[in-house]
Image (cartoon, rainbow, N blue to C red):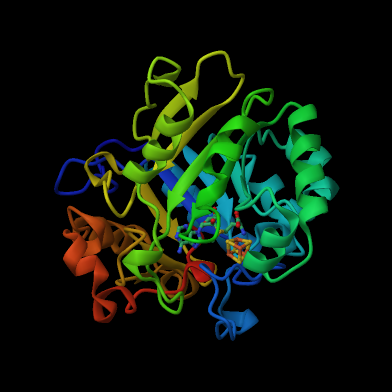
Length: 335
Ligand code: SAM
Ligand code: SF4
């Protein structure tokens, strides 16, 4: 890393070491909280990064201090050249991980092992087949459930991501926690966040405080152990005494963790987002295609990063549709 440049440090002294790359805007599920009912306009193929361009942009970031890259989407595994991308990125000195819905991940287990992916985040919003079908608008529960067990057996570190929504899966919070009794996984409850087209409303959200109320109603205070969070962790981590796994809450809405943010996001069409909630984007792909260095564009983007949630520093601001609908739909950001 060229420490003199330090282009990944922002004006609040946050050093960015983690890049999330979205490989595609497409998905084999249609989660209601992520994708608008009628889908999103997809970028023409010529506007999407090729695998060479992904590698080239990723390398620039790694040269400047990125140590961790997570592949996401849409669903990253539906991209035809997923394995080619993985193989190229595995040549960089970086920890590679993936966020997936796990519908087809059984086809990639050998590739993931070959190219050093150990940490896999899988989305699973319900342990109930009918509810899963309702929220994802697809009938893939058995595949996903069996694939999760397969991944655990194959020795991957698994985190399950469950977006909590009122009157949908809040009654499963305790079931999810009990799911960690015999499985070495971390279930992460995610507060439902507002993005363009997902009909967000604060009243549909289950907060960090509410998750803890459900946990405390079922388990004694002595049995709920607060774990040490990792540096730059976005989640507050807990464990039930004696359980193999753990649970956590990602509270971007009620308790943002922006102070320790080390994340940057690259969309499938090559736009750098300096914050999940920021509507502003910086066009790295066009700059690259013009044959120019992307470093000045990255530097400017980092300098412009707001202290909290893309400038929506209060819940009042986050709630305003005219502010959060300026951002993309989550399906085209990647979480
Ligand atoms: N398809 C992959 C998956 O589902 O894991 C990767 C992409 S998905 C956009 C990444 C993560 O974003 C998932 O864990 C999903 O649950 C989460 N997500 C999507 N929309 C969200 C929202 N409105 N609020 C909170 N989390 C959301
Ligand atoms: Fe697809 Fe993941 Fe969005 Fe669900 S959350 S629609 S699986 S990208």
